[in-house]
Image (cartoon, rainbow, N blue to C red):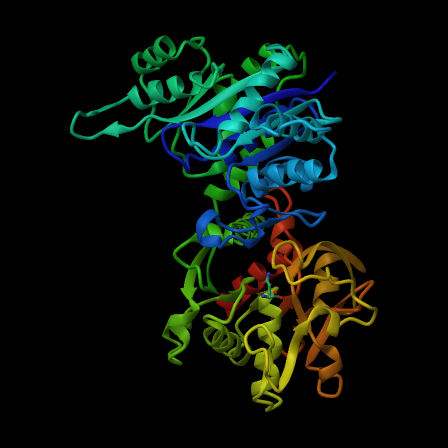
Length: 540
Ligand code: GLN
């Protein structure tokens, strides 16, 4: 079977959950035994999301092969089996960059380079490459229909409907159906306008997915059918749910997957979504309850920590625990007041960049270490652990990271090439974009360690995204047995995991385990952490 394409666009407003909707549809189709992957096209001009503040589009999701991508790719991986790669996320900037590089090489043989056909051809080439070998590729177009920036993407997907025929392509448009309080009714007009806008690009949607606070009445659904020129079983209502894990069943109940399979002429087995029943059951029937403090600087933007929050949720499902995550601004800890840390059953320091709020993170780490509170440090978190320990336990107050203090006297956190046994191949330029240690790296675990115990494996593969590392050459003489290095990278011998053996549960890692956690397969480190938080609660 040649690849079928499903294009998902959004209208009316942004943040409707197109990513989750695409992932949920992908999940149902996967359960119908189709090989499926999902791609995101982002209209912004950055080459990738690596240099964008997490305040703007949320976290940077890192793929196994080291691409710094949009957070929606995290949703895709959490809902389907296939792993995301560099091919699954393209931005306008990356498309233009490739076209311009080709032009400089002279590959266009004297042509004038234009949006149509050169940019649109490049977009189509990338879509086709991403779907290669799969039965179905879902392509999510970022932004909202009507944005100037997304026009080349819409034009490219319109052309694909002609190139591959309408039997092999499908357009799904996600819109918002607001409830107007004063009128006491929901309004379909924004949806009608948004479809009109989409039509102006030459795309007639086959299916509408309508986000709304409440169920949409059949008379309103009929109105949408009539005005938007779609079949009467092609309007799907996506009401606000208390769990995203309920979406696959909600779609399936409205026969979205059957409609898609029929349109794309795919004769496949029925969907089996029973796994979600168990997930939802566990979510609604928790036995334990813990409070975890996450100390970060983007506390007003939970999307900045999307995968960490999801991974905590997954391990909560595994441990039958409702986890209340308190996002604590590290700045608020800098006055030395520990009130915000009282009554926590676990403390987590997630990844981060720059020197803002570091003192608060050091304070929280010291508090967890001294008060035997389960502690989990991720990426920046492990660097904080070392600085805190060397300063406060070993008494070397000048210990710091060159990231926060480039001229510090005791740079125990240094650029990676200074910390590696082998000559570390740093991408040799001063650019910030795409030059970190990225993606999957193997790590060797020490026997008898907490990490080895949790992973039940000697070698693990985890994703990275960091520029600095622990300078073991500087630490050589002072590391003692309490601070136990339990994970070392296989090729560069970088410090990857540290534990405090005298503490009930204290572990920090240089990689990002959160990217490998799914609702059906919680991550061992998160499982261990939430389990320890439960124990801590019981003992105190
Ligand atoms: N800022 C640190 C570094 O670059 C940690 C990065 C992170 O937490 N992802 O090494």
